[in-house]
Length: 605
Image (cartoon, rainbow, N blue to C red; front, side, top):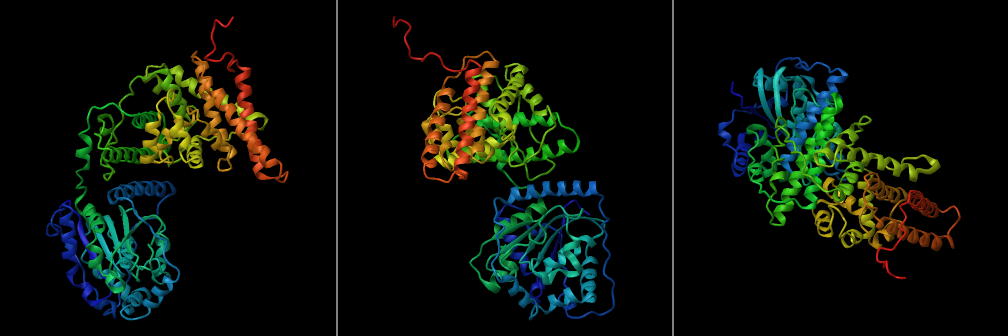
């Protein structure tokens, strides 16, 4: 048998469902997407409509062929499955899993007890009919090789029931269910939900497509039953019976894309366009992205075992997203893709595709590095994933990065030393670490919301390191403050901006005391880092801290006059005041308080 997978189509309960009318709309959709003709695929479409009415001879249910997993095997299988699922999600694009509608589960239960759902009830409740259908299908399935399964309506229930009973030599390259009633408890045949608590080892991925207007799909997906699969809602102008038709689903471009990907692999030409990048200088957002990805790759090199595997898997998804986000922004701005970013693209839809490693970073000045590396040290560069690192790994990776940047490895060590000193200065006798790695990104997003972005876009100018006003505005619009790139850009602005809007935003009720502490800590860390490196102090930090203190104190006095003494808002403001006072005290105690105004003349006498 060839390496190409066989397409196995499992029909529904209506008599015309067993006809091959489903082929034409699917073939048309595949052709429109540039996939080969469906005639080139080997198709198996067993007919079992009559077998759903009665049984001819007593048969045994086909046995479950998969062996139980050990704990470690189950963990590895789940991780491998998630990688493949992420790949197919990437191919299909953004989707809506849906939430369903109240009462529709009861509708499907009622339908299950009526014609033409008598056949469905027979399959679920009569072991002989169920055994007869499964054995008839298995008699058509080869003993070895790869198959792609499409399960329509009751066929989706049969497909799920079939999965753990396939021959051990058969791999399911992809399973697509359409119009499925599996979310309804009436279709939990023989405790199927317990059998499929985890994805079976023979399944590459499973995508369930549902239509809001399809009553059989209960106006919801089936991830509530099998949370490890992907629910993908499609829309159609058809309603009720027409909305449930298999041809309606298979005419949909996204459904066809899933089938085509499973049968023929990636047909994408996007990488070709991305890889033709132009040797352009990077703007600030792209510099942050490239530095962060390089730093993350250096972290991977210092990890081992399971932790390395998980971190590398997370980085794979993050890098793909970053490159795609930058590609979209470049396209929207009619700007060519810089070659240093373009070369990081890879076919994420292929789990076996190699992950390109960013080249060692170009040299940057100390002035730029103070902000950029301080932000990297405080950010989670694999957001939205969270993976705790062994002690010293992040710092060692930062040493390597700073050495690559021509700053010496000591600069990288000083980045973390400055962060520790700042944290200790603000923690006081409580000895509480309010700032986890990556918290600055969340804090940045909170202040952007609180100020409407005005403090950042207006206040960032000269001295803002990598984050000038133009790139902040562009970064927020393109990536959002909560994404990895947007978070880095915004965090960079928050440790450089001198606008009064920042003080106002931090003082406001929309910003928590922990958020203020996270931001003040990073601003203090940059001052300490400059001192450790023998650089000129940044006197603007004292001024912005004083502005923050003034705004917070004014807010406190305004509320204190009328609020209850135990007011939560007052406690938050007191915490903010304490934080700023500790930061100012540290600057004063370490000779970092401004002593001479920058515009004062030397010949006043």
